Image (cartoon, rainbow, N blue to C red; front, top):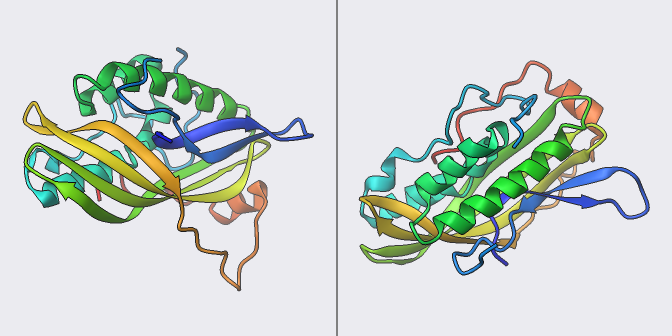
Length: 224
């Protein structure tokens, strides 16, 4: 299953509550042919961005350069939630290969719009954090590489999504094009997923947000 680690929206069975689960953009393959601006940004986000940031190290045509680029690409989609559709399209095309860009950008704009609309229904702050935890280079040559990044997505939104964490391994297929590493395809699989710590318990959205009052998101999702 091909996807960008953003978010997918599903209706909760037997309830009117809309549940937003970490996961995301399906069928993110160059082989698949497939506008309203953001309102309030999730907690700790940067609303001044005009385009999704990309790793400065992606122009390093080495194995380490490919790894650093993949770390950024695996989590950069978080910032697209806060951009209007035209900027999301430009941001995706700026990091995609020429052949993958049209389908990746079209599908990503649709998914971001759906996620934005769902999260806008929350009366409180939205917490959505994507973090790369570890990575492995599966194959590399100066023209193409595959890097698998283990990530965690944390999401909470009152009346929309219970506090949750989604752990996935994101395989980023890279190609060297126009003097930098660019995304040709992206794919994720679940896990490995750790259990909740023995001293902790599940939280509801309101106390979750209250406990983080005054906190700001650490760093940008664009780099390791």
